[in-house]
Amino acid sequence: MEITLGQVLALLGAATAVFMPGVGSAKGVGLVGEAAAGAVSEDPGKFSQTLILQALPGTQGIYGLLTGFVVMQRIGILGGNLLPLTTHQGLLVLAACLPIAVVGLLSAISQGRAAAAGVGIIVKRPEELAKAITYAAMVETYAVLALLASILMLFGIKLA
Image (cartoon, rainbow, N blue to C red; front, top):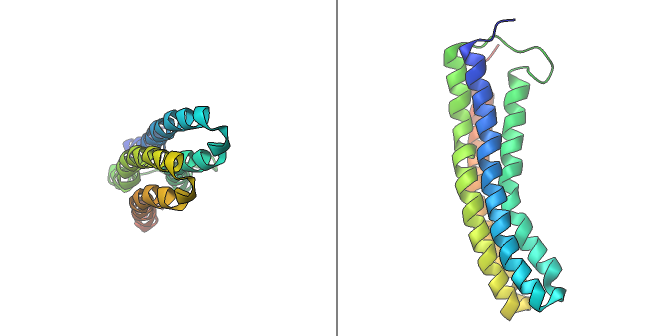
């Protein structure tokens, strides 16, 4: 079986959709983990509150993985029946992956910073956890919008 440039571009799109938000999520979760470790070292009772904040930047990695799965399903690689894609189709798939790739990377890091600052809130005022979560969750909005844009574009591309 011969691989076309279109197939390579589509797979590059899937890889980009998974890779970039995954890196951002790892960075964001790490940022919060560093702040949380300091808070928990002073008060072990704050573990569950800080864990909630630490989990938030991980969602962009999930969104990227979901987008990658959609690409793999649409081009037939999951079923073992890879579609013969033109270069134009491959470029369209790659372009459709860019919103979640770029926004996922940047929003996960930004959300990690917001959630790390939220750890500071619960250190001083543990009853304000909801406010700390809200600040971090606001960043999530843009990752969700990017996910929707990527998925809608992917389902709008005629591949077969």
